[in-house]
Length: 323
Image (tube, rainbow, N blue to C red; front, side):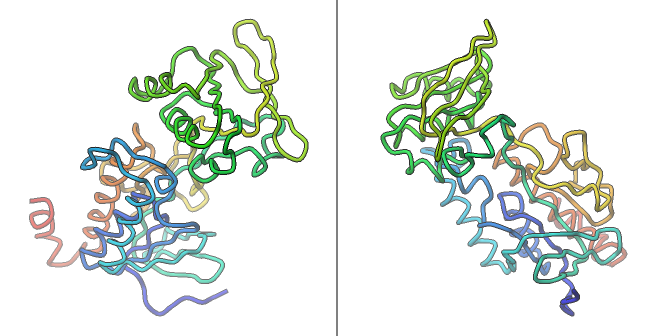
């Protein structure tokens, strides 16, 4: 395959979540020719979140879809070009990098990896069998299918409690299964869940098996206190137990940590010259829309400076951009 266009982009951005979209806005506004690759719709996981309460500027919270669509429209308006194609391979070590999709090979002088993270799985019997038939990792996507039914949410962080609360808009009952007595979520999220009469709790419990025939009919849970097992009848199981790196770029020569996240410096630079990482794919202490936005802005500015190396403009860049 060799469908390489003659035009070489200044920057190719892999992923159109909040980090990738922000990088696209900054890069395109900075005058860089900007290509953005996304295998699904723009916005990443943030677009699938019913309500984002902690993004600054929205006193009543914001719809994840509406917020990410605004990011996407802004990136498009300033000239970023989007390719809704899956990235299959990247070649990063040469001066001109190459991004390969099933449809084309696209060259770029710099690359920003913003491919995000994906939900962790339970790795228990029945999870794969009933994926799409009662097992879900996205309440916003699938909650309407469980109107007036009983669903189980597995997890104890902010995402689990927020999604449990969202599910109560449709389901008759939501049971939250968590391996500890205490939650990893914020006190506000815990209070909201505990005050909702539709939410009940199975704490100090771990899921062991998802049962069903054509669809999910129950989940077997085990107490970590006395190891007794019990089958909890339900119509659906929603899993929110954290995330893992969305893609592995080690084969392309990018340094990653033990969990598969890309290691960068403060300027989002990886170990490969001209290659940056931003957002949830990066090894960082916090993964939120606000931090992804900051990462994306820094990565784009760093890429722009990289592209100016050896030119007269490089000398004045820091003063112009960083003040």
